[in-house]
Length: 370
Image (cartoon, rainbow, N blue to C red):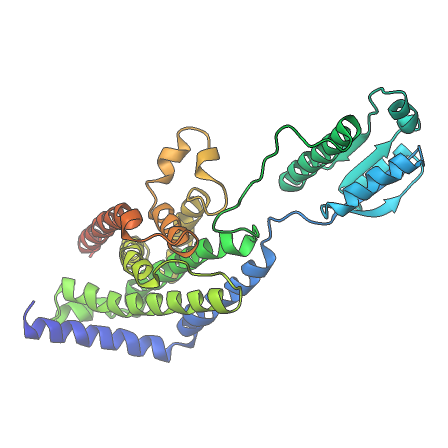
């Protein structure tokens, strides 16, 4: 690329940057909306199940039944909000949504324990929310198992004891898991939408043909228009990372420079998708709808919300066809696990291959449409 070509590319980039600065809507979408979404989702998303509303029916009313209920409350997973006298009333509260869990202790609970027989309690679980239901079942089983072992062993130690150690996120904070992936998702949405609208805006204004009548070549036009959005996306990515570290207290255990180097091909892939969308759409509304159509599969199949290993075949293989999957894993590797280039070279290679493919296909499609 010679000096005159660089000058033409710089002129197009300067024109695009001035248009962004003079467009309040674009600035609002670029700077404010991702930060707003970060605060909304960062505080709203919480997978740690705590204080589940619980209704209790204690037909026994004995010291043993009260001790068992105290164990449920001390676990911090159950919050007893109602104590009723009948099973029917407990079921009614669960159906009404006023309680998620129902614990029913039969009248012969203490007598069966004293006789050395198995005493059974009934735990009703609202299965409309799978995370709460699974946690309630697991914790209730653990509590009853622990109480059974105490009665059997007394003061004797357990023959086998497990001492789990949670690495990288010892407090199991939801923010530590979701925000590194949320950064990637917002980066994808912003860069794709902005690049898609860049060309479509020229179509709507009727200035795209005028640009091609100037000495600016097609490649210089594309490069000049995409450069400001690469810079804006990377700046926004850094700003969101700063908020993640300073406000949400998510530690960055690896090198952030390494993460930025992996982010660059990811952003270029998004711009390639936006370029392809702009060649297919004739209005900004249509471009936005097409962009949303590409966001949803990549978000749900990327491991951001649901673990890839838990997906049915062949979805785990399909998931690795999305660049979002590789970038979210890279973000969590650097931020949470403290990984570096030995762990990320494959991610970078795949993302650069996807970026080149997306940019080439988007450029050729744009030439064909014009």
